[in-house]
Length: 95
Picture 1: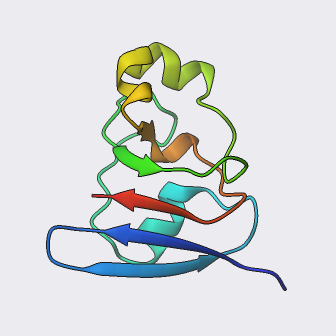
Picture 2 (picture 1 turned 180 degrees about the horizontal axis):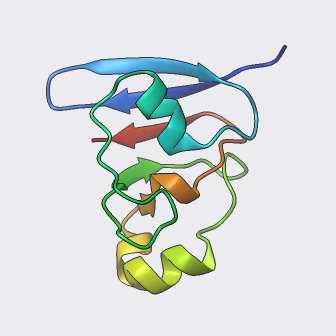
């Protein structure tokens, strides 16, 4: 089975996760016991906002929820809502 590498950078470590294509980023980080903040899992609270490097094709563009909750400026700076990101290729998350 194919897996995709997610690199998670925190203030004191770098972790690598292997996930299946289509995995929800927030759930993958929670299952790996990484310090991922969240409250609602639907994008309404924005607690799971993270900065990311997403190469083209590694995740869909920002969802309507993300565009509404974060705004284009934050999205342009690389911020996304982890609960709205479904992994399709390697990417890096900064917590």
